Length: 218
Image 1 (cartoon, rainbow, N blue to C red):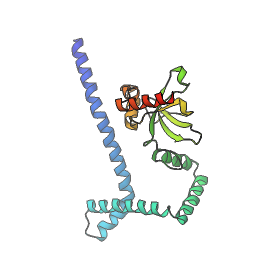
Image 2: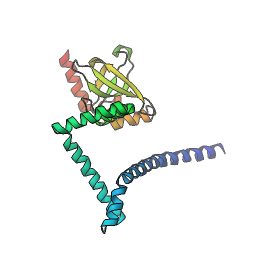
Image 3: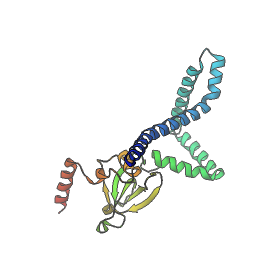
Image 4: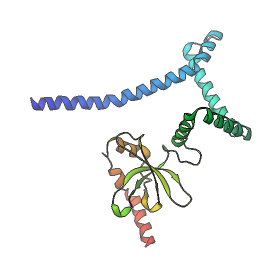
């Protein structure tokens, strides 16, 4: 009976682990589509009423026009006039809406901008928070490189990588891991450290290169 209960519970958990990520992904897609539909709904209704477009065709045209609008706005702010307008609007919104600045900085950090490295495109590193002699390190993402050689890193906490800590470390306390992608590093965080062998096991070609560099340094 005990074996049966164990078999049933493990099987249920296995099925849950398969379905849960798919359900979350579908929910996020549905939410994003809902936001897009809400934005283009007035235009879609106008196209259906004024043209022979069906609802689906009007939605597609609305999405394309929305993307064109994003492109034109991005093109405009690359000009001197557009940059000035953006700065004025940014300053105005910062004064009127205190939370706007925080949202802008979060988006800037995620996508890159204002001299920062995008978190999603950052370099994975092994950060020695108390120095190499202590032997304690954490998985982190480089978010900024400073002119004096120091690094600013973000160390996500398990199992939710969107929360974590920011550290400013000297170069000798940071080992860059170019063979590890941000996605791989985040997976180890979500899994509470499971699969972290990818952090410590350097591929053979990279290991030989690091050994050669260390020999030259000596």
